[in-house]
Image 1 (cartoon, chains in turn cyan, orange, red):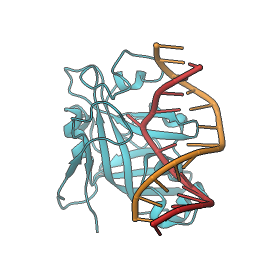
Image 2 (tube, chains in turn orange, red, purple):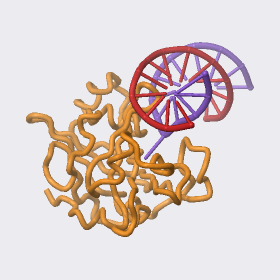
Image 3 (tube, rainbow, N blue to C red):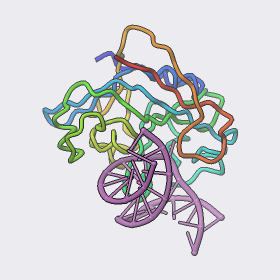
Length: 187
DNA sequence: CTTGGGATGGTCT
DNA sequence: GACCATCCCAAGG
C-alpha cells in the first residue's frame, strides 16, 4: 500500500502539488480496482490567491479546504462535472488544496472506459472532469481520508524523479502571475 | 490541427 | 442573475 502519511500534506500547498506528481491514486469499489499515476496538479491557496475558492471566506462549498489535510475536497462545476482536490497546507495557514488535473491510467482501464462511456484511451483521465468520471469520484467522496484505504487513497508511485514543468493555472482569470500548474512527462 | 458554441446546475452576489 | 478550477463535437484550415 505505502500510503502517503498525513505529514506529507502538512507542508506548503505548492510543495505538495509538486510532490504529488508521480504518486499513485487508487480507487477501490467492491473487488474492482482503478489506479493511475498523477501527472498534472495545481495549487490553490487562501487570501493570498484570488483564484482560490477560499479567497473570500469560508463557505459551505469550500469548507473542506479549511479542514484536515490529507482529505479529499470534491466540488461540482459547470453543471456537469466534479473536480478532485487534496487538502494540503502549511500548519500556519488556514486553507489550501491541490487540484488533480491529469492522471496516467494503470489498472482498471476497462472500468474507466465504462465509467466514462467512451473508448478513447487517450482521453480517459487527461482532465479534472474526465478523471473523476473514470475513477467514479463524486460529492460522496468529499472529505474522504486519503491516507488510508477508504476506497480512495494516494500511495507511493514512481521511483525515479522527473523534470517538473510549471505554468499558470488553467481556466482562471486571476492569479495568473503564479506558476502553480505543475506537470511531468511520463513514458 | 484550431476555434467556437452548447450542455447544465450549484454557488455566490 | 452571473459565474464558473470543464468537456465534447462540429466546422473550418
